[in-house]
Image (cartoon, rainbow, N blue to C red):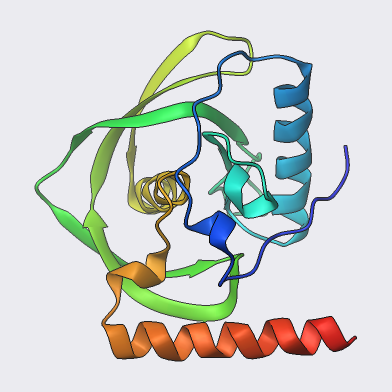
Amino acid sequence: MSLRQILIHPDPRLKAVADPVAEVDDTIRRLADDMLETMYDAPGIGLAAPQVGVGKRLLVMDCVKGEDEAPRPLVLINPQITWVSDEMNTYEEGCLSIPDQYAEVERPAVVDVTWTALDGTPQSERFDGLWATCVQHEIDHLDGKLFIDYLKPLRRQMITRKMQKLKRERART
């Protein structure tokens, strides 16, 4: 396992729609391991393959926050939302590709998701609370959408300018 570099917005790779994973092979398993290590190191609760420069429909997440709770790392390959609740939930979201920027985003409170697991088996689960927010946020990444795309244009532009400045500062060091 190794840490991968997380792309920072604006980067055209973050706006591209990811391609389906055709086959779960060792390359995909290694990518998933690297992404989990990168996510935990960041630290974050979710990471999509496009965020590490890989245009594949794969995401990892673990929304367990309690120190006394066992981690629950999930790897979702080719995830699809199959049902959303009418009830909405607002959560202050952040993103590893948009560091230190947060905004309230409204999303369905409960979602059903199907995906392929690392062993190639089909999976499905109903997510709610933070898990529902996280899985929708990460699936958005697979569709080339960022959480700031839900914001008003002025706020989105302000955050984008901050990220451009951050990238310039990082390039100098």
